Image (cartoon, rainbow, N blue to C red; front, side, top):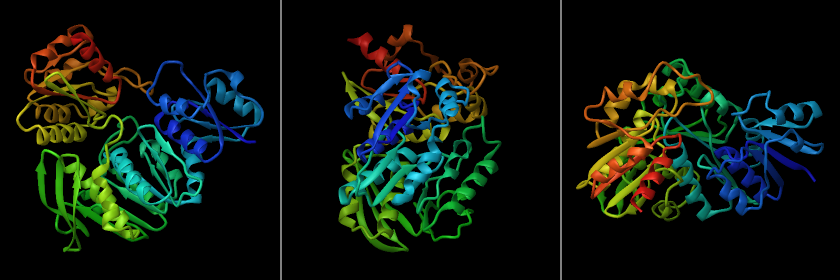
Length: 431
C-alpha cells in the first residue's frame, strides 16, 4: 500500500491536497511544526496523522510530497533523497494528479481563493467533483468529473499545470521578492495561457488580460458592455447584491450573491461564464447565492455593538476592495481599518498605494510588519507607512483597548500574517 508523506502538511495548499488524497482512498500522513495552525483541524477530522518534523519520519515505501516553503537542506527532504524515495514538490504532484479529471485552474493576482471556493460550491451541488482551495479546504471524490483548484503564480509554480480550463481573474504586480515588474508577471500568465488545453475564462475589464494571446477560445466577463458575459442593473440591499447577466448583449438571467463589492460580482461572473460554457443550467448556477464564503475572506462576527471582519487582504487592491465591500454593506457605520503589512518587500514596493487604499477607511490602525522567512529585514518600519496616512495610529497588543473608542463601528482586520492575534486579544480584553 502506497503511503503519501507530506512535508509541511499544515500549509494551506498542502493540507487541501492531503485531504483530497485521503478522500480518494489513499493512505496519507504528514509532518510540520508543532505550533497550532487552523488548517490542521480538517486534517485531524479525517484522522490524518500529523508528526513533528524529524528525519526518522522518512522510511522506505513512502512517496514524498514537499511543500514549496522548505529548501532541499530540510532534514526530511535530505533523508528522502538519500533513500531515493519518489519525491515531488507540491505543484509537481498536483500537475500530474489533475490529469485524471476535467481540470479547472483558477489563477490571478487577486480573488483566486474566493473564486475557487465559489466555483467548487456550485459544481459540488451539481455533480461529483474534487477541489483544492487555497484556504486549506480540500475534497476528493473517487468518481469526480471535475477538479477545481487554485493555481498560484508565485515563482511561476502554476506552469507545472496543464489544465483543461483556466479562469484568470486579473493580472497585477505582486510578490516583488520574485517578479521584477508587471511585465514579468504578464509574461508568466502568458506562459500559463499557453498550457491551457480547452478554454480560458478571463476578466475583460483587466487591460493585461485583454492582451493575452491564446491557442484556445477565450471568453471574457466583466462590467463593461464589450465583454461576452456582462453584469448590468446592479442592486445592493441588506441581503446582498443582485444583477442581470447579459451574454453577448442578450439577457440571460438574474443572479444574486450574499456579498458586496464589484470584486465579488466579478468572481460570480467568472463562475457563471465557465458553468454556462460547460452546459450547466441557470438554476444550477444560481446556487452561488448559498455560498457562505471561504476562510479568512470577509469573515464577519457580531461583537457587542461592533462588527468584526477578518480578511486576508495584503495587497493595496485587496485592501481597497475589502474596505469598499464593508462600506457598501454597512453604509451608515464608521469603517475602521486595522492593517498588518505582509513582507518588507511588498510594503516597500507599494508604500504609496497602501497609504491611498487605507485612507479610504474612516480610521486606520497599523500593526508591525509581518516579515517572511524568505526575506531579510529591509531598512523599513511600520512608521514609514504611518507617516503617509493622516491620523493613523500604531496598534500593539498592549494598547489594543484603543479599538473600544469605535462603538457601533465596523472593525476590519486585514493581513496575511498573524493579524488574527490582534482580533483575539481585543475580544479577550473586552470579555
